Image (cartoon, rainbow, N blue to C red; front, side, top):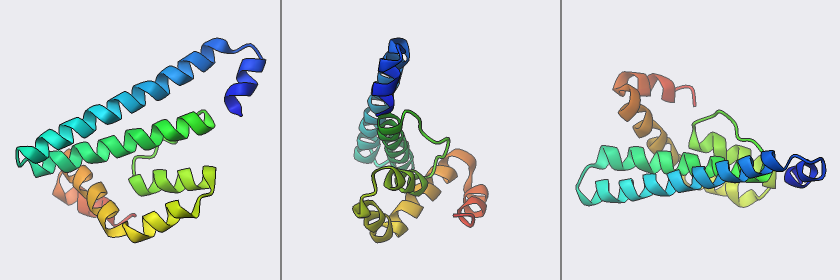
Length: 128
């Protein structure tokens, strides 16, 4: 809907930029997923979860950008999934968040810990 309106108003460059950004996010998400698979095969579990989180985050942002024309500056997987739910309204997303809440929290905490350190990860996880 957003893209069609932009096209009708003559914003072709914006549309191409938008599509290009979606494709870039998906490409990067797949690259992070490949890194996670390599890390896992090599027993580098901290890096595997870090790259998995990055892959999920970028892919969800690509989907949100494609559907709405923007994505939030949020980084949490659960937050991005909730935003996706608010856009498409599929209850399966909320069911997924509930069912895998513990695992999603662990992925988010592992990402924060890998990036910022254990003490900051624990403090930040209390805010979720």
